[in-house]
Amino acid sequence: MSTALWTAVADGAAAVCFLGGSFLAFAAGVGALRFRDLSARMHAATKPQTLGLVLVLVGLALRLRTGGAVWALLLVGVFAMLTAPVAAHLVGRAGHRTGRMSAERLVVDELTRDADQAAADDD
Amino acid sequence: MVRSRYGAGSRRPVGRVSVSRVQWWSVVWLAVVWVALWGQVSVGNVLVGMVVGILVTMLLRMTPIDFHGRLRPWGLVRLISRFAVDLVRGSLEVAVIALRIGYVPTGAVIGVRLRSHSDLYLTLTAELCSLVPGTVVVDAHRLTGTLYLHVLDVTHGRGVSDGLEVARSQVLAQEERVLRALASDAELVEAGLEVRR
Image (tube, rainbow over all chains, first blue to last red; front, side):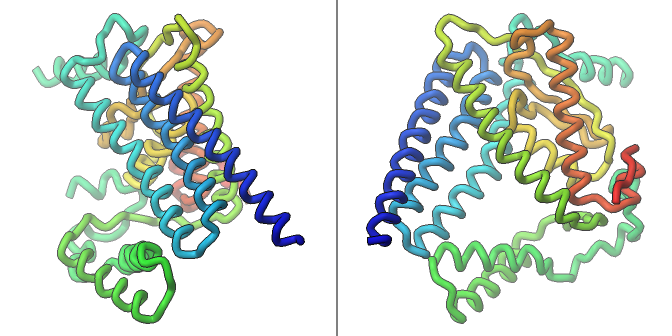
């Protein structure tokens, strides 16, 4: 009886996680498509995407309920969280250096200011 | 030689930085990953994982991380729980902005000079700032310990200068949480933070 109850609770929680995760992944996709410049897109690709993935992984863990699978899912989550910011940083940095972050869409750009300052100091 | 100026409180002479020593923490971490990939804990898995870890750390050598702090359990709990809350808030914020029809966020790139000069804390702060509300790291300047971050939406119902100040103080608060979880007393004092017991 109680086993069946727990199974039902876990399945229900898994369903909620799947729905939440897919919603966030959807929002991330919309953001990546709709935002107007590269760096704004990177926001969509790091945050909702990561949490969406984590929710889907939690859902899977609740549904599968076997030790081995859960460890593998945990690893996927940890590596996603470790690598997403690094990827976003590299893309953002490359974008900024090649002028893809259009100045007119940034109200303040202290990186360009400081880089210009440093270049002027070198001269 | 340059390194020692920036590694906060590094007292080790630079020439002697453990070239021949095996980096045991990396080996343990790689062994844990190996065992998790196989999905079951057995003597064979752990042993093979250790061997793989030793091989990887010896063949692909990385600069050892200078760690002179100490783990503070309470600070660590605060850092992690706050991070979990922030991750959810940050994701929902971006999701809402993405789905608001016709709304164009106002972006900005700000430079925030961190108070500590350790590579480790700079990296951790940068990683965490990329996942919490509002900011993504665009560039990091190691010599001055400055992080450059892109703020997705500075206005967000406020004036631009208010929004920039909020973003700045969020980054510094994040750094403070990292330091309060990991830094030694000396590093806290150096960063201008009071040492709490």
